[in-house]
Image (cartoon, rainbow, N blue to C red; front, side, top):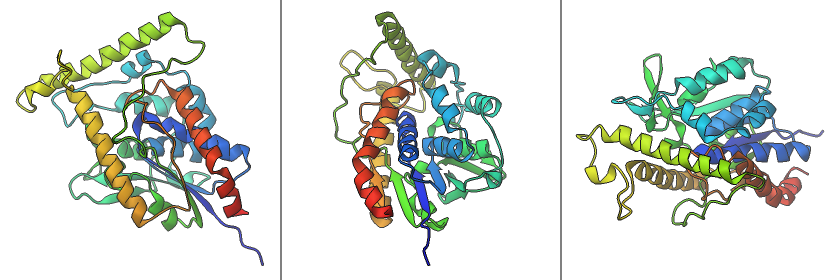
Length: 311
C-alpha cells in the first residue's frame, strides 16, 4: 500500500516582503509540486488566502501594477486612534475586486493566524469571512487599527507566530514548507535601492517624491500626538535622528526576527525557504517584481532538497 504525503505551506509575516510568497508558489507550481493546505500570518495570510481562493494569478497581476500613488491612496490615516491606518479601504478593494468566500467553503484548507490583543493568545481563523480573517491577521500594532471580532480585538499574528509551521502540522500536513521573510533583517545594513530595469527616470523621481510624502505624512500625523511620544522621534532631523516611523519599522523587524527564531527552533519545518529581502522597506509594496523574483530564486536553491524529500 502506498500513502500520499500531504504538503502544507506556511507563509510568514513581513509586510511588503510578503510578495515573495507569490514567487515561491509559482515556482512550486512550475515544478509540479502540489500544495494540499496553506496557512498564513499577516501578509502571508493575504497571499495564502488568494491561493486557497483560486485568485493568486489575479493578485500577482494586481501587485505588479502597484505604484506609490496607489499605496498612498489606500492609507485611510486616522488620529487619535488605536492605529495610524483604519484598513477599511484596502479590505473593501479586495472584497470588490477579488473574492470573499467563507474559509470553510474554500477548495483548499486555509488558516490565518491572529493575536487576541487582550489575552495575548494565538488564534487560528479557519471559518467565516476570508477577508475578515486577512484583515485581523495583518493588523500590525501601531500601524493598523485592531480588528474587532465579536468581543475580541485582534491584531497581527506575527506577534505570536510569524511563520505558522505549527498550524500546518495541526491541520494534518506531513511535510511543511515554510517561508521566512525575516531571516536577514536584523544587523544588516540596507542596500541602496536598485532601480528596476526599463523604468523611465521621470517615473523613478515621481516614486521617490511620493515615498517621501508618505513617510512625512505618517510622521506628521503621529507628531500631532505630542503628549504620547518623545519629540526627538517625531521627525528625522538634520543630524539624521530616526523618525518615529523608522523607529517603528526597525523595532518591528527586531521583534519579528527574535520571535521567528524561537518559534522555528521549537517547531522546525521540513523545508525552510528564506528569501533575502533586507533591502525591501516596510511599505515598499510597489517593488513587487524584484520581491517575487527573489522568492522564486530562494525556492530554486531549495528544490534539490525538496525533490529528494518528496521523492
